[in-house]
Length: 113
Length: 115
Image (cartoon, rainbow over the protein chains, first blue to last red):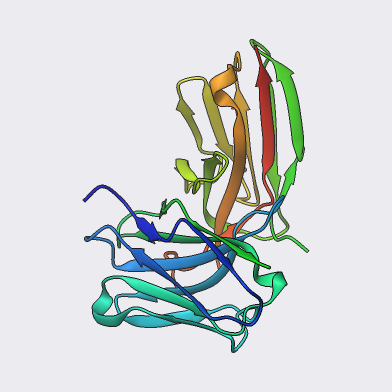
């Protein structure tokens, strides 16, 4: 287990299309987080899971965004009816119950054209 | 408005110089972390501080958590080109139910070290 894996690394989509991103966490890490980062900004919280339970969602997460973590393993983030403002780097991070620090994946760069 | 304000936003220095990056808030944090991020990659954790007044050293990097746990600083001694990157501070709010919930990030300090 070499770390947090995100797929795809890059995604270009037309406005109005749906996209889905996947995150595979470090296997011992029960907490999984999704963040979004735009140029010149720090990561912005979207949602997080403890095992399969979604414990918190940002108010920024509109009803076009949905995240799942079936069986408490990998997670998916879906964006429906994409808009140009959705263009960003989508980061997944995980951690275990003992440590404060996140381990981030390399992110998925979304470009909506 | 950002919960954590970082300064400066950009820093461009010559190899061998010293620098300090600041992370300030009016809120109290149960823990604060520093990350470094390179272009096209996710942030990488450098350090976590949890006790007010705590100082941690990582080779040429020194991290300090303020006594009131509202601020932190990162000091780099004799900077090298390999230190170039985006430095982010992030904290967990003290009044949240769980200290393992979400983190709040600053906007980052983009550091460039020229040879």
